[in-house]
Image (cartoon, rainbow, N blue to C red; front, side):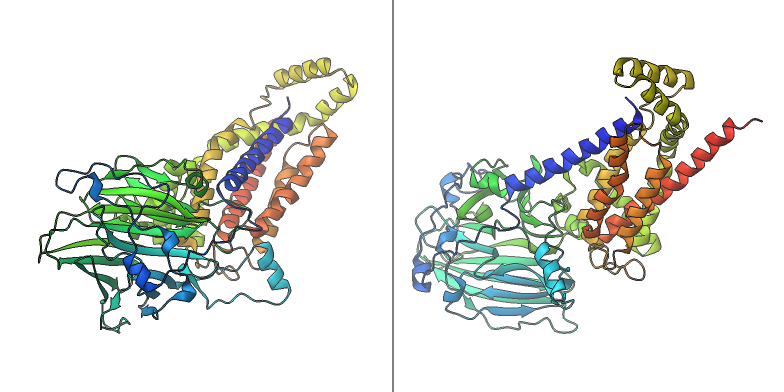
Length: 585
């Protein structure tokens, strides 16, 4: 088999990989053209909500036996089901609006639930989906002043962070359905102020709960404290639950050309990082660690994450469920020690609502930086990101850091690439003779193959020599592809001139055009396939694959352009070396 056929098989294999990736997306997510509607949770009046019994949603496993220092298994009750949530339009009290230097947040007094979180330092990316492009063509422009809204509760989108107190003893403690009273205090982080605390209070079942949201300047991490006081005449055994609820639709504006994970995740030291697809939860096939004294829960999407991190060393359980049609939840439940009459207890947790900033996430909890989804090549992608970050710290620009990292990787693989290009150069020299062999033997493929093999042997050419070195490099290049695709550090970061955001497509399509041109030059440098059909396919490849790069992030296209230009330079140099060796001395 000649080298061109081998190259075609490599391309075919890569195409199958991307097709499989798309199939995985189809299995785990709804149709990208028509996502399923969010089933609006059933409305409930505040008075009914306050009396609602904390029943477990379908699919929530029974509480496991906790450590001796906490109440028995029965004490760890599940949070109330999402179906009991009041609809947004039925809200009886105005949401409390809070603003800091990084947030614009809304908290619903019904349950003191965070129902909206706008990220003031994260602009909404231009919409490069089909509907978005249609909007541009019809005159609808991208609004650069529009910010990312991560948490939201509307008629067609549900994404909430909520908490509450529950118990299996039958007591009805304040939960995410209970009306809370906003306590007096500032709602805006004032200049020079480092911390803003907003408090809510509720009484139910002989338990008073004060829930405090503590916002800090420059941070997407919010400390959420629950202060519990037993106002009854009997001891109480409450449990605190932390929960994230989200619809199963893909994030707005997500590209159809590449797949990024959206869904819940659970992390413990014992089981490490576990992603849970919406489809698995719907089919009740989810598998994750159910308990531990460490770990966290999260809802992940491209570039952003919401995560609950309970205080370290406290026993907690982990649960996932489909609460209603196209509405999913991930929860952690923490039983507390019994509280005597008149006594008090407290519990703290960290809520992260923001970008997947790896350094900041790593500082909050072990493994939290793993929400940056590098796929099955994480073990290669992590070192590549560290190298990229190191270069960025030197040059101060992510675009130039990409260029430098590509050069370093190309230099590291220079011996392998040189061997591949030498094999291609020798193949190009014997291509006319291969064409003659094909013409000479016509349809007698056995004799034709024997003659070709004899020619390879005489000229000391390995027909696979050009592809094997490339195959060795493929995992590294795929890993770097995921680094550039998944790292939020590229978002809103300029390179030069017209490229003002490495995480969105090139607005003038200059890099994709250079990409296609470089692929065409590479095609011309390679030996022409003897088979006319193969030759036509290879000639069309730069345009077939190049068009996709019009919709890929500029940082990713920049990497491929630099890699191609370096490959062209190296291949031309090696070809000249081989040609010089053939000249008489």
